[in-house]
Figure 1 (tube, rainbow, N blue to C red):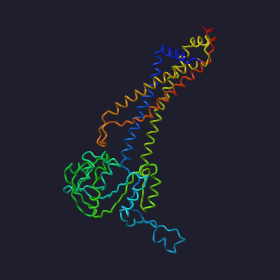
Figure 2 (figure 1 turned 90 degrees about the vertical axis):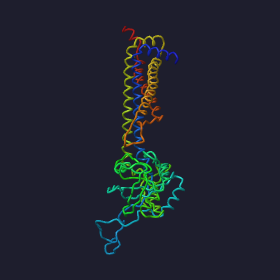
Figure 3 (figure 1 turned 60 degrees about the vertical axis):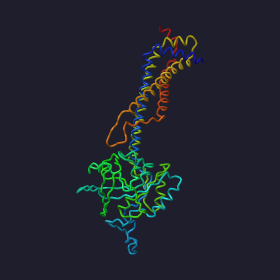
Figure 4 (figure 1 turned 90 degrees about the horizontal axis):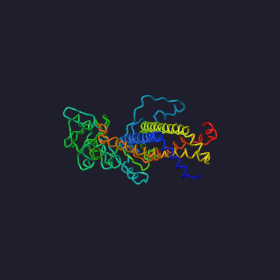
Length: 419
């Protein structure tokens, strides 16, 4: 089989029908291009939404949970041991909100090879005071540098920085919602009162914005000693231990292990964000379904064009067979035409998709809910380009294979006799 000759004949057929060949290639181009655009944009958007939630969520959170006692005193009464007991209106038992032995626990966790980082927190509820105005406040005492490194806190600071908070003795990253309501800005002072009545004056070193109004109206960040001071507690008072793992998939298993080991409550990131992950998976599934449908439609377009081309080339096929070309040769002539269309159209589709996604990536996207996002998110993952090109070749191969089988079976005698 002379492949060079067969390729030359295929090229001649395509060039003699430039309009039809161009339309077939454009079908592949727009199919692949649209696939690249949709996957890049949708997965970029998914990555943005995942980041907003997951980047600020620890893989495992250890804390003391307020809950009713597991066993009631009446269960220990011998006379009722064989009876079914029903106790109504059980009140939560009195427990300390701090984690017992928090400092030794953190030291132990930092030595574990599967853990990337450990950050302590103290959550203090209270009020922002502004004249006669009182706003509900949730102050999170933490290590600002660890929050920046492990949970990208800097991405949510619209003014100021984590470094400024760390250097300030009595500084606060104030929620932007509270700042607007109290008419405060960076450099001003805000008075904060604890639930017990302890009042402390803090200098605003930055403004924090999560993108969720309810959080921004209440939540702020301070250094760990400030939160402990506001609550009147010692340096070993820790309400939360946040853990960042090297492999997030191990979170559910390790959370159960740490809960038993340290006799505390542990919540893993999958449990805390189960509904969000389900929504993200559905969005990705829809993106793939729509994109693959576009590629299949492009494949049918190529099939129709090659099918019509065979009917138009009946005389050429008869001449080829009469001059010694086998049915297999004729089949590969038309398959090679389809593959040429697939390669050219697929390459142009990749270029078209990249150019359009680059334009989208540079398009301004300003929203108050996402202060650090300036343009539309795009995912440039190479796998989308590889999948697009591979599918282009597969689709065009089968689009040319079925019509070529019909051309392979044509009897040149019947065609010449019909002439």
